[in-house]
Image 1 (cartoon, rainbow, N blue to C red):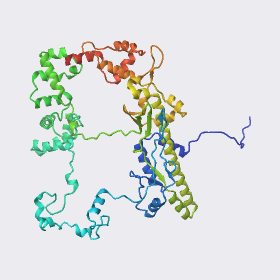
Image 2: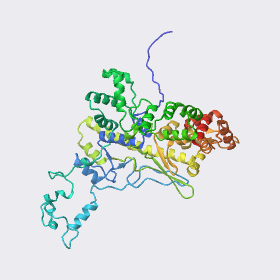
Image 3: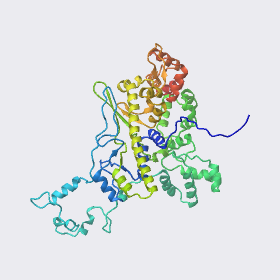
Image 4: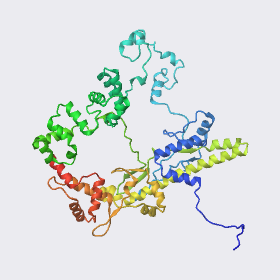
Length: 541
């Protein structure tokens, strides 16, 4: 066999993802908030992209007034991948399809006067001419010294009228009146300074604060802290016991039992029986009421009162100083009901970033380009801007297509509730709209839909199927989980349902489900077993 080299031509077909295609795929899986951040970075890098302001006008570029003036005079040729006058995308409907895109009017660069400005103009207009302009000597007519109604009394004599100002006559800054949320460390540090008169022990107590978690528990070992401070364990214990007097009660506890004991001691309720109950919290968690009453030496009434007192305590007192603000979910799609049982879908236009391409500025820059590199850069930036507009338009269209197919399949859920949620897969939606399954997966990531039943993530509508015992349509796994939860919530305290009983009840509703599946769904919803529920309900009787 002879080995040799030779040249040959060969023609093949291959799928290559261009940068533009990669960008379009990336935009599909972004939420509206993430898309807004991405658009901001693109606008900062591309001189031909402009953002439309929330008032409907254009965000002017104050550093380039000539460019801003050309934007106002001539407008833009493209807006979100749509011709002038059209919205960003069409809205889909089930039954009757209607356009949901809002008409985009041309924006002018002149701002309308505010209500205050109009009122001020009418007040200062000369008699008989209410539309006249303001007096040119406006500043002199409205000085602080002009107080004719107060007999020209000097303004300094009215400093004690509570008008809001400093002793030097200057006004208070608004920042001086803003409230500041107190952190757990600041709250405890102020008490430590009063509890400890010895600077040495005050410093030690400050070190203990550094080892607290958000709930107020001391998570470090006491011997380890004593070794780092160079003191004995006994002295560290004395400092800790003194620090545990801080408010709120339960701070600097090393475990849940000690935290509850500190709170009970502050209420003067830590008697011997309560101490035994606090030391056996694990058995209380297992609802071993009979054994706890025996070792505590109390009757049913006293035991119920002791349990009620423990339930009234705060197991994590430090969390009261956590001031995290809950983030509100902003839906990407809005679904509303129409007459006749139809559903109307539209994109949430308030959260969609609106991008414009400045064709006028592109023409001006292209005419002034002299070198080849400048022309290549201008062309590349313009091509990138056009691709971004098309990708955003394609993203909006794809989201509406997927959402329309989901609503078409789950219309019974929207009308009747979660028990009518149907099983749905990504492949079924992809086949329904003629797209690839991976595209549907990207569209449904980080997207939320506002419906009359609430706000749901698009992934919520995709559930596995559970077969029916009589054939026909299968049941959604989510609807079966809600059915199990409803059965357990309605069970009698004296007739707690076992997992086998739940299987029999579901079989009566033509749901073919195994016992292990019921156990899996029950545990996923954090519902205890029938034995634990029976003990818990017995304690509440």
